[in-house]
Length: 329
Image (cartoon, rainbow, N blue to C red; front, side, top):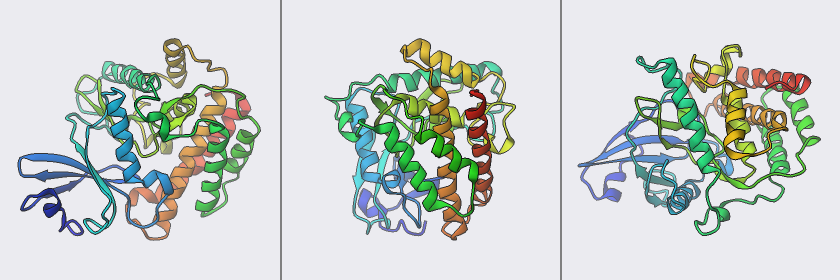
């Protein structure tokens, strides 16, 4: 594969076979077969970079800290390379976890009970992540929890402005509402920040084997993490364009309200301000979609999936305003 000619020498093997994993919208992921060993390689996308979200060195260190903290639902990190001369960008290698990744089509054999199990297993894995010890593992050094909610709202609002290709008044209005509604207090936990079904490796019965794509993981308010998950958690009655990221609308899944109630029951956390967190999640998803659409519109990517992402931005804006006005999630 073009651009990977120096990889065999780096791995100490005569040749490698590379297969690009389909479905990702951000960093690029490949399966690397090197002799008897199989790895997964992660590298940033071609073209524009989006700061920390594409920092391969940091993502590798996140995996190392999670391993030290005793978290088992992630691929074990293997090696990290900062030398851009090898494949044209920093990259890291991790183990390949067996299982399936479900994207926009359910597995043929999947039943309602499969998705019920998946809903609960996914939330259990997220709750376990939010319960990890931060100091001894080094996870605490990977973020700044003080003022996290305000900083996140301001940061994503700025990113949206920089990525705009047209005016979307609903997202602008939602960001203004968020700035005036920052919760006065919050818990602190290690959070994934992009927790949805297609970032999970799943067993045939719906049990989560591993969580992938730790590029945005940090220390902050765990309800901000839950809010992002809820923004991806489409239901059957939602607009079709919002269903492209998660199969949570398939019969058997928890509803968004059930997600909130289950999380609150297990963690004991106060979820009375979840509208704020859900609207934040929608604005964040809209911004990510807009950033990718901007790259597509500038010609950095030819992936046809990206051509409709401006519709995601508009639909997320409509959903955010409706939630603000009704208090419904």
